[in-house]
Length: 516
Ligand code: ADP
Ligand code: ZN
Image (cartoon, rainbow, N blue to C red; front, top):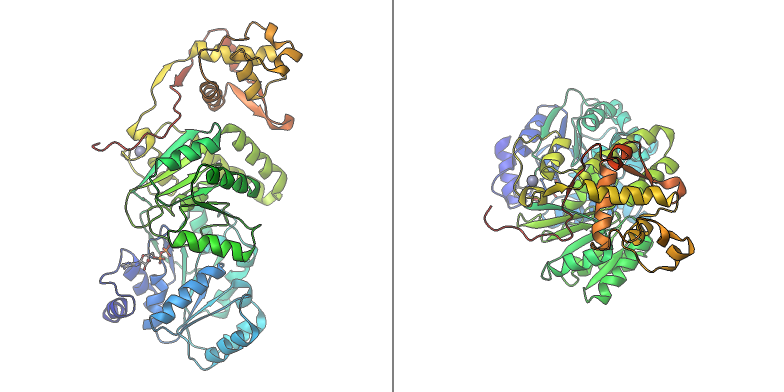
């Protein structure tokens, strides 16, 4: 068996050896076991079912939620001489009829099918009598409520096990914490599956975080440091994507905007230019990237904090797939975090609320952490590391702490005296003693805190405010469009009963140290 697999690997795919986990999974399937494969994006999950599809006698069904990915993989497999096809809503009726005919004639090795199609009873009935050697569920985290990308149409895939009780199943995903992993096996009715968990580390990606202040300027500056290399910038809204894309254009950075509000032609245009290295940057919502296989993406920027660690990992994972050094930059702003919490509270059903909040809070603590970012990331996926990585901003440029008691008191007393009119920018304007209309209208120039912070920049104070929020001394009240409020613990800091230790604010991504 392993010899035929090695031959197929060589002849069909042109590779000389299996990666860790691939052959183990295939052998387990060959022995009739179910499998659960957890490997990072780019880890080589597809071969775990593509090789058996060729080696095993009979048909391999692949369930995938991603139409573009199906098309890509089928096209690729056909070029390699594999009898492959797909069935989904994008297919014309006569093409679908042809696929069905090939299916009935046992003339296919591998069929990709969208879950809703597979589960239609007429379709299930039409394949029941076929020799189905293997069923693969790709992007299997979609089956779990615990996953970050739960999809309704995946819900019923558990029924498949009843229809095909003797066929081995393989479930594959790039992102699974322990709860999701257990839930996938449970939802799909996998029978004591062989579990392979690949290392989640992407050592060539350097993780960086900056407090967001005038995010679009920070993005422009960061991209200018990247010497023309390709990258992706993610934003949380379509409007932001369009705005930032224009800003990059004005700064002379070749880029395209990509989100679900653009028509198909425009999206294809941007994607192709990017894939062919004719466009440096794609500014996008999360709609961009799934199934896009570009190996030389050198950086991924999150202009807005994503909703989960899984999403962050998956999106940053699109950088550096060729193994060469790559950068991930997260711009973090407490106000974004508060906004997302409000979206989650307003937008999710009761059964999703806790899960989504829990996932976002994990992302939030990753963003606020002052210890090795890779350690936090890998620990989240149960791939624990004892040593700091040496290739993240915290490891390379450890935060320098200083006694920030007086600095903190300036901010806290300013918020206290403003009593309600306290957007972060207004606090900063008062601290710096600016000549802005609103201050004079409200007579805030008469406060004792007016101008006590004029020696530092806006960005400095913004950063300090963020740190005070992280420390729990102040909070953002989203019910009143994001004003700042003092917490109970601010009192003792104001009275000088406790010291406040702060990190020296950092505004730029420092370039990697050569010899670490
Ligand atoms: P995933 O689905 O886990 O994101 P893919 O299956 O798309 O990853 O594989 C990522 C890349 O690695 C592909 O270009 C694939 O051809 C390549 N690859 C997979 N397995 C091997 C192997 N054993 N040897 C060499 N390259 C491989
Ligand atoms: Zn580190």
